[in-house]
Amino acid sequence: MNKFIISIGATALAAMCVTGCENKHQGASEPTNDDVILHAWSWSFDTIASNMKNIADAGFNYVQTSPANTCFFGEDGGMALYSQPDDSVKGKWYYYYQPIDWKIGNHLLGTRDQFKAMCDSAAKYGVKIIVDVLPNHTAVDHSAVTAALDSAVGGHDKLFHANGLTDITDYNDRYQCTTGKMGGLPDVNTENPDFQHYYMQYVNDLLACGARGFRYDTAKHIGLPSDPLDSLAERNNFWDIATGREAVKGLKLALPADSLFIYGEVLQDRNVKEKEYSEYMGLTASSYGHALRNALRAGNYYADSLANWHHPASPLKLVVTWVESHDTYANEHESADIEDARIREGYVFLAARQHGTPLFFSRPAGSTRQNYWGNNLIGARGNDEFMHPEVTAVNKFRHAMHGQPETVTVSDNGKTIEVARGDKGAALLNISDEPQTVELPTTLKTGTYTDAVHNTTFEVNDGKLTGTLQPLTSYILQ
Image (spheres, rainbow, N blue to C red):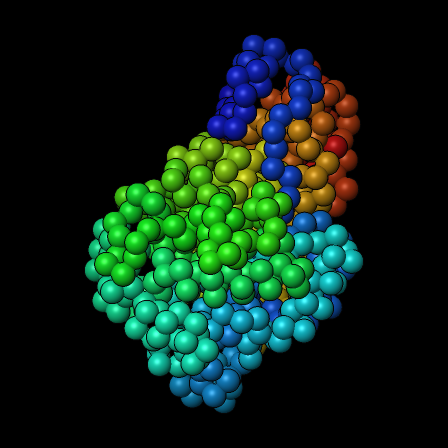
């Protein structure tokens, strides 16, 4: 017996069609999230621009850049992703997460002119740019912040929360979490109107250059209206300012927030206010990514719970899904040991689905499961996985399935997954190390289907799909 797992985003009508309508075709249009994001992690602005045709041809709608702000000049400006003490080339990728000013351009990724040229290239190919922004903290060495920034916010002491130089000891204490020093990074007083005004000038300059979205790093560390106030704050109104609900000192977000792709890194834990954050922006499904990685490692869908999104927000508000992020790969190496092929199958699963906006993280070129850093060079293009034929095929499948409800079906052994989209198409995945011959229930119409990537044929008769899937391989049927 094979099992149907109905997405939490599927409507009651879709569920009835699966359980009660047998082989009647589904054609109803439903709300769907259709876009996909390439995270061009540590690629320079010039590298992104020169690869824009490849990115567009692979079916990506958005490219997410690493932070564009002026950042700490660490290790004499070395350009290594992560250097060891005896390496001849020094550097660390995380220096661009240590702002010393909120202006466009840094020594790791490029200048303002190069940023604008990248945005112009994106527009030429119909791709939009998401910028990773981080208003929550400065460099560990906060004496390195610019005099212009100190002056703009009313002095160096006004740049930080009263609690901003105190280490967080309990990340589930909302006062500590939203006002304290995280990982050695001093916590900015994001409620200071002078800082808000200065920061919004940076955001609006990004928009003027052509950016059309933002990922808010460490978003759960910026207070919500319901959170405790720092003694130097009058209101927790940063998110109202950042999303254009309010102006600050006469300055407002230059474009309507609903015309932009804005999401926050709200990593899930106890006492995290996901629902309140989701009122302002899309969120990340970090717990789902963890569960998916467990299933991929085991080669078995049932190794963890994947039938729901592990999140209280609506699937349409739960914007970004991933198999891995730059943090799970580069920071704690939580996902770096998983083979490229398994990561790819996980991405195909996410991209074939009705909800979420899947993000494909670009691993370093030359990286292996023994050498996570590969060529170990900031600015270079990542490996070729973002252009893999299976990735390209599922991205284009996702666009073609606009409005089609999903039905997820899994074989009893958990090794084979079908994501059907109405009766218009389906993605088939083998997440195991062995070939799998299947007979799965399906909503596809009766007929013969040939996958365009592998030229493999599958048959559908009387609501049953049959065929053989090779190890760690996906197939797109339309």
